[in-house]
Length: 309
Image (cartoon, rainbow, N blue to C red; front, top):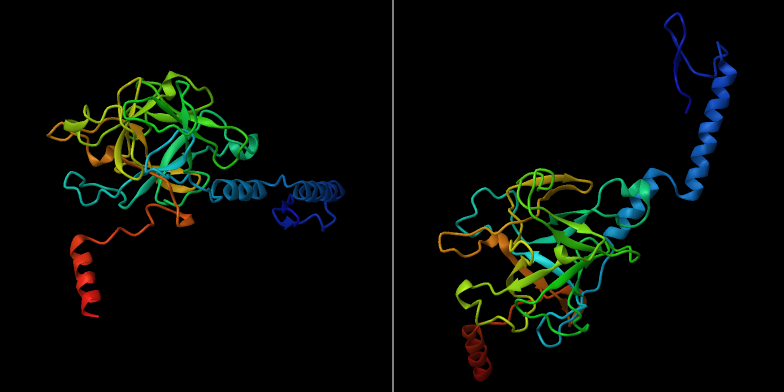
């Protein structure tokens, strides 16, 4: 418990050895212990703040349940980039599987308070379980009523609280510059801000570019692949999966705002997003956990088995 000090002869002594300014050293150690006990009682120790922060950010969230199969203003959803390891254009992936968009607060939050502060970074995490980090709310930008379906080509906002419920930040992006770019890919960045402006407007586009005009104005289906486009810069939200960043929670994938096109002028899997809603049969899971319905072949086999029995 006592700090070690060195005498003039080079030998090390603790304050228990009455040598030199031993009384001052004892008083200093007692004050340090009293300060530690006081901070522990008040919950101001760094390890206590870190534990509370993780408990909040990883607290389970309840996603909205879509009764008509569409996304609505006011819904709490996940934005999941589906597994792209099977696509031929993906050669140098850092990680496969489904990745969800999540807030990535700076470590300064441990010292500044118990809520998200702007600007706040984003990252992609492997967990697709709804928690405080990756739960986003669909917001109305142009005065639409809560509960109305979001339509293709219609502006909407994305808000996140990180599980704190005190202050909501909004997903925003702006043109790339020397002072404003993604850390690893050097492309257009995305971040969370506390001002809901035109930089926070996003649109959902149909996955197939050839049918995009036909689907303009139709409701956006839930749990289906779409492309999320920034309204101001016309760049699509993306997870390259080839760049990782070091965060407070470990290594995670970088998120940027850039449209990756293949040889057919169509978006690559980096720009695919599934807007995931809650599972109506089990509130603790999502529609990604719901088993797929049986195929026609399996249904025919089941009918034959029932007929024979």
